[in-house]
Image (cartoon, rainbow, N blue to C red):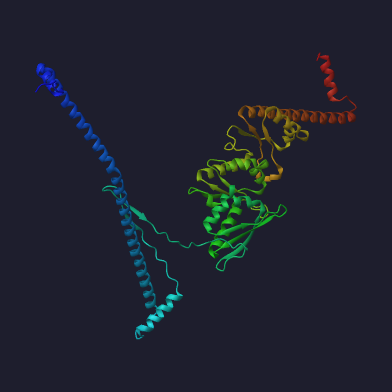
Length: 449
């Protein structure tokens, strides 16, 4: 055939003319084909994964819904079993109660059934606490967890509240006691701590009447069981008497007492209660109950740690003897000076001016014997202050005593001279001669005296 060659013939001719180029072309074609197949295969897999994702999510939701239904069914079954157990226990309680009432054994079964139904309609069913129910919860995968469901039952608690009208309940007792108005603060305590402790200890309701400033007594109303009311009244009376409440103290708290004559009560209390406050602050604290003035008692009650009580007793004895205690004022000392009664006036001075001068110039307190105390009081002069102050006051007092002695000697000499002169004058008037003392004076002048 004649004519121009085709494209395939031309390509074949070029490959035959140049074989390396032909081989490279064939290899490139194969590589491109392989890449095309890989790309199209990966896209298909991604598309298949996208199609499977919603199906997997839907299957997961279906599995969870199925598990939830299974758990609900199990809970329902267990609750039904618990309710059945409660009903069975209730039936057993009723049968036991009917058997205890002593029904005759010859009564027909039908009559017994009728009586049981009547009793059930009249008698309240006892509340039977339901035991906790354990529910098994199916979690994700193979994990399991246990959830406890507790069924709460209400229980009646005994109430000790007083009726709003103020009238006690039928089974409660009401008692009113009168106490001194000035002791109400002790009964109430700081922020109501004491009265709340009494309420808790006695299980009583305690109401305090509104205090009248003009009234010396205040009414306290106690409401509760008879024995509780009696115990509460006892605690309140002891608190008023002792000026402290035992319920507020610890296990180491002990009680004691000391005899203090009424004449020294003001010394123990001090100006504005300053001394008794210091006594109460000894150690860990000491409770002090002073006697009632109306009864005229002399026994002072002490409460606290035994060691603190001993120190308080020592301090009280020192106060009665010296009006000062080194326990209460450790920075000060006291000494005694024996002064005869006839020389006290020299120490005191006109209207007390001398003793005031000694106290002011030395900074001490000088206590002279108090005649009102009689034999109970100290017979010596007591000086109170620091060591240097006391030493200075002692020197001044001793100087005053020396002046008193010198004055007494001079007075005695003057008295003796006056007596001698009187005797000489009497003698000379009888004999007519000059008195002896005049002759002695003349002789002295001659001798150059």
